[in-house]
Length: 154
Image (cartoon, rainbow, N blue to C red):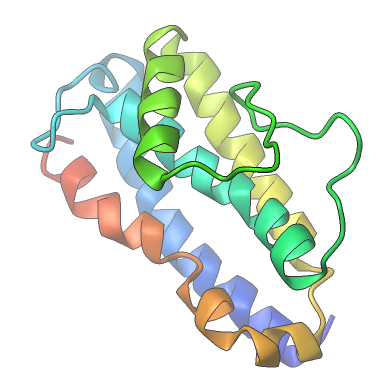
């Protein structure tokens, strides 16, 4: 793994650690807390997990112009097809999935999504990092974006 790749992964981990700490501070019962924007913390965690899972699809399909492995799906069971819906469609679907799950299941999905994303990102080349610097540079920002919401209820 290159130095540039390590720096990207370090940035992601620096954003992930406080996000996960805030989730852990809320605890299982705190995940049912309704946040300012309307979701519960559990729904927000599932939302973030989905977008972490989406990294593999974006890099594989958009940047590498390859198909995802047969049977690949998101943690909610959603399998992408030819049309990528508007982000609000994804957000609503993932929030509905979270409502149907235990807090423990959502936490497990979140941890698995993060681990899978980091493992997948070790395959990113320096050429891909350079060609798609805006995308790779923004990874981890989603965790930071939602951190304040979680911390205000922890």
